[in-house]
Image 1 (cartoon, helix red, strand yellow):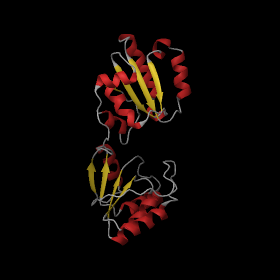
Image 2 (cartoon, helix red, strand yellow):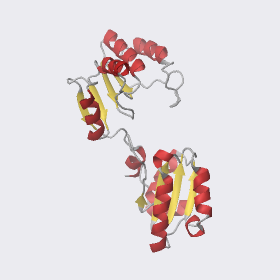
Image 3 (cartoon, helix red, strand yellow):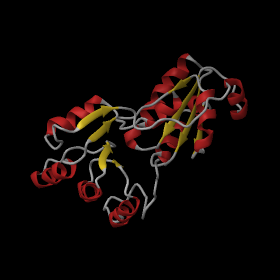
Image 4 (cartoon, helix red, strand yellow):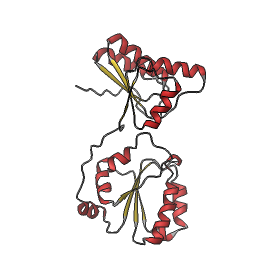
Length: 238
């Protein structure tokens, strides 16, 4: 059985580990056989959870989701101690696994598995029905999803789409995004390029349950990220 428990402040911006005592109390109550932790970078919470796992006799596994081995010797020693009892670490790509393995912060006894960070709950939709729902009838149709953040580099993607429009005037681009850090820059970019602006639709915070409609309608999924740790949008688009 798998039980998922939300404890304390689950905001992704909460990085101080302030809810760890609540997590530990939950673990002591549930007495699980396996504890899985998302993330390797926050060594203090991971070390506390590792101690709890040792007390209750649970196996500990973890998933990589960004971050890197610390350069500071003291911080690196904390990471090494926190990871000492982690039996298995899942990485989304061998490049990230190699970086952590060669750093010396992971035990040579730690088993490394290369696997996608997530699977997808989405079910494909008939393409014609999806396009009818979106009100689009063009070729090619491109879909982009992510945050309008510099690390996702949507402006480079739009410059590429501008070149495509020159060769494929019927092309259209649909953009769904969770956060809008670069919305001002993107709006300004489109305002100076009317031939591109009329081919781009900013969907905003598109409901997750409707992402299957967006991906099913598209001919191409495009991504311009400078780096990806899990590639969730790609997995769902596929």
